Length: 316
Image (cartoon, rainbow, N blue to C red; front, side):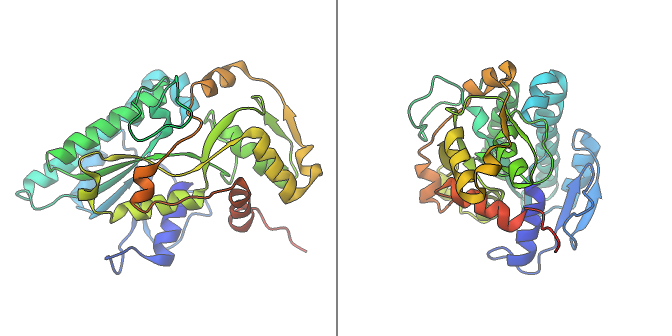
């Protein structure tokens, strides 16, 4: 979903210092309403031969969003490590081979979508840029491992990488997925579409959010950011909005009225409650803000973005 938002933005707005973009989209499959224009390739990054074939084209910039989501990674331990971690190893090794084959002249910018799941409690009131990465889920551990690999391959000069610790992206369009965080979008998206939504946690739960529009903006901004400004610390906590579920619901009430709120049904889920209890709640992303990254400041803005960009339009 974020990849489609990114592709649409690149087509519409281009990229600083890059003209006539030649964009290739790679995925295991594409939705029927996928962005039109860029060339498409299908395959599986878990296959080392696929990574080699992609690196052989020597792209200037790679946006690496491929992963299985948090709930799936937690339930399927081997699958999570094979796809979320080993695919990064295969990709970096493929780009190292291209760097070496070029005599050191080729080095791709790789922008990796990491996650705030790389952090685990106990948390301070706000997580600052000095807080340690100590994940408490398999998904978070896999993302943290990828960050370390990308930093080391960049230190050696094989690639030029950045890891972006995305907030939970909300409101996600389309159908719910297997992410444990899926309900944060569901309690807004489903009521706006006239459908019932399940709330598996207490409305006092606080979390860190940004819209799909902001996620695409983060990626575009990172693509041409001067890596010297990172001073060797190539993983960034990105801006977002900290709010409680109750505050989300109040924003929904302002946008769509009580009839929408009435479609939210509390159904506690102990597995999700336990997982969410170990997630970060609030950040002070000073480094990323100083580097020019921006996101929404109210949840009302996040809902407005969903309504404007992704809410299905009714006829008549």
